[in-house]
Amino acid sequence: MTIVQLQQQPSSLRLDLGRVVRYFVYMAFINLAIAIVITTPIFLPRLRFPILLTEWPGIYIYIGYTAFLIGGVVGMLAWAVGYYLLWKAFKKDTCDKRILFSQLIITNIGVYVVSTFMFIGGYQGAFYAHEHFGAFVVGKLMEWTVIPSGIGIALSLLGNMFGLANVFFLFREKVPNPSS
Image (cartoon, rainbow, N blue to C red; front, side, top):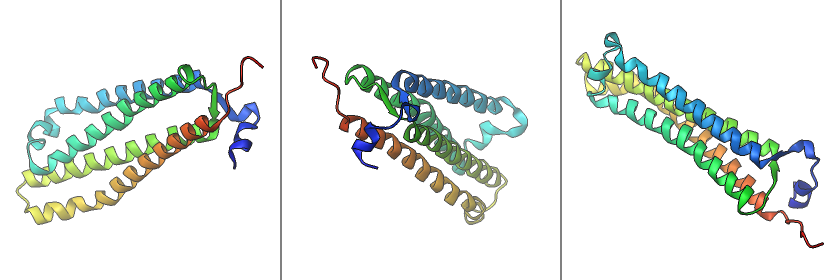
């Protein structure tokens, strides 16, 4: 699809940037609420989180949670700010709906996948390390989470590439001259 074809899309395939900003802010707050809910098991003594977080593989729990906060909360807010600037500072009104929803969905799926599998690997590894299993055994028990985590990272990057493509197409569009 060429730039000219993108510009001549029917309005049903375009989405107002004000709405786009709201979608990303909503996703940031939804992800923040989920991050708060995810944090509550730390207070359940039977799960032994305070102990397991101190074991070597427990760092992957932190990495997964940090990836969730950065990609799912801060990343969504950053995209909201970016689209807001396109809307207000660069006078862009609409963007391609298909590219935008691809970005939003794929990025969030990637963030959830990488966070989930990093958490599972870290929890499982820390549990067995705490039970005095050897480092080799712990590594073998955790390794099944590596490929899904990598797929989650790839999906997050792909979703952000959709966002960059959307921005690129917005900058390539001609702004109508108000004097004509």
